[in-house]
Image (cartoon, rainbow, N blue to C red):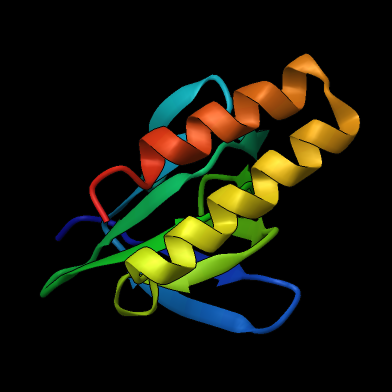
Amino acid sequence: MAKLIQFDLVSPEKSLVSVKANEINIPGSEGDFSAMSDHAPIITTLRPGFINIFTADKEEQYFVTGGFAEVSAETTSVLAEKAFTKDDLSRTVADKLIVDAKLKHEEIGSDATAKYCSDLEVALSDI
């Protein structure tokens, strides 16, 4: 039997999921990666995108707008700026996230906010 990894996803508003998983796909700031049991320890920032959680009997998806992931051999924890279940992420919610990001970019005008807007639009293009 494959070893499982504990996965926890929290946002400032609530804890969204705490589960034993086979694999977790995470949208890292330097690219997507998978966390599994016995993974080397890392801490990374996240870009907007979907986290896919694979358990023995199902796959779950959550959308994060950014945040941090900490991975160790036994656990993976994600602290998201904002997080949504796939069912809660409507086109209306996606459009509001994009508008808010663009307003922030207009206010700040940095390369980082421009990249964030672009990453957010790409991640939400199929909603």
